[in-house]
Image 1 (cartoon, rainbow, N blue to C red):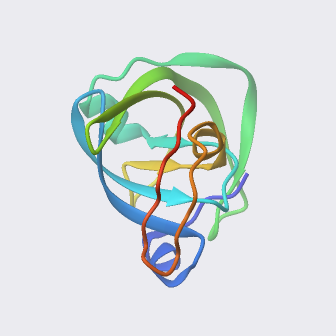
Image 2 (image 1 turned 30 degrees about the vertical axis):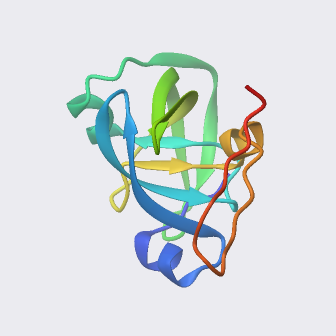
Amino acid sequence: MYTTTQEEAEASKNGISGTISINDKKAYALFDTGVTHSFVFESYRRLGEIGSTSLDMPLHISMPLKDVVLSTLICEKCKISISGLDQEIDLVVMVMYDFDVIIGMDWLHEQRAKVDCYRKMIPFNPLN
């Protein structure tokens, strides 16, 4: 897995950032087609009192400025709210500094999202 910084995200065509809600708490999010999983920043998780459980196996996460970070926690079935639409999302817990959450391909795929890089928009087409 690979994550990115705010400066890299703004310069990249892989991601779009904005404000969303996780478990009814405002979050600064990066929607990034370049990452496989979705992540939550550990401090945001603690402040939002989002529960977590241990992963069966630790995840090795490649960072832009560091070699590899291990994550051993996941927040399952968090409520993600975007433009009045509520869905569930699983978020791997890790240390990040530029975003509260990174929404990756795992969730974007489930939502049948289509990333419009030119307009910096993401239309969602969930099956339900």
